[in-house]
Length: 481
Image 1 (cartoon, rainbow, N blue to C red):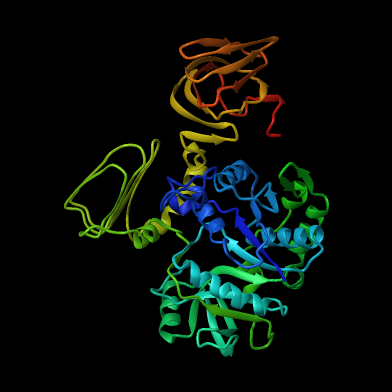
Image 2 (image 1 turned 135 degrees about the vertical axis):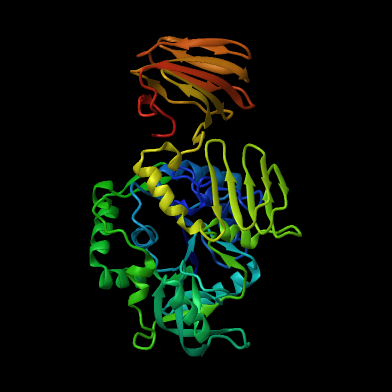
């Protein structure tokens, strides 16, 4: 039987603010090298026997990030399911299970993977996946557990039941799941670790689509019914599958763990198991977690970017845009981006999530976007802004184009820095080269295209009494926005 990977990529990663933002969350960031965590998750599928191309469930706002990062790896996907509104992992997995049964007409085992986890030992990952498949093919639910290192209230804890032998060697073992405790407080977590009968829940699951759908129907019938209706009315849009948003808006928001796993009792219901997983593992859920897994200097510091540190100990200093100069600090986290700086004690960074909620309440744009904003045609960066004006730098990829559009409240002046642009303004179309410019009046249809083989760089000066991104009316768009 083949294996169907399902990658859940709908998270917002708020605890890694200010680098992680709503429109560019942590799974798409390069925090550990050249590849993002999403790409590392994709690469981890290589060499898994009988694995199909993955199904990816993501937020609609991230759809072009997913396509771009897949393209960088030359990787294909079976389906990209778009959530118009985030409803957590239980509805996401329900949509994926429905898609597998309806599209492939095959109840093949799902390998359910979060897009934002770090796994140190790929061969160990492949080993336990092969073991888990053996159990999952027999209509069992299989979870993967990590030995707890410290009390942590950010993870679920799995209580081990009876030992079972899956293979012939001593490592081919598993346990029935006795109980599941989702994110206990720190004192309870300390007691669980001391009992030596609990593993951290890694968030990786294996089970058949039918097994998941039966479980979600039993424990959360509202989620099952609404997701079924949303899927039945789904539309195909190029590479994307769009479940009906009017139904998804009514769907309860719940995680796989709370919705189903906490209801399982392996001693009474013999179909839930956990396999120990011997590897470095992290969900990289906080800046302290990144400090914990990165190489440190002789003073216990992790320094990323342009850093000058004197008498600094056991700290994470992350420069993304400007130099950080730190003096006489210990156990701190300093994260710098072009438009925001986070400074916190290394023990307090779990509270970053609340800080981001406050930014959202205050309607601050920093919770949502960076100064550099990614688009399917490339990206733009806000260089300066003030009353009645805004200056951007546009980077348009070779062969890409902005939509044919009109603005009702702003005019635009374009200057080509490098490359060759084909410009449409009203009924006129012409080429602009380096150091040439043009002007687009309010209310006039226009389009910008890169007809060169290299990046097109444009300085755009906007002027008007409203400069919001929602002042766009599109007439034609190759990306179906």
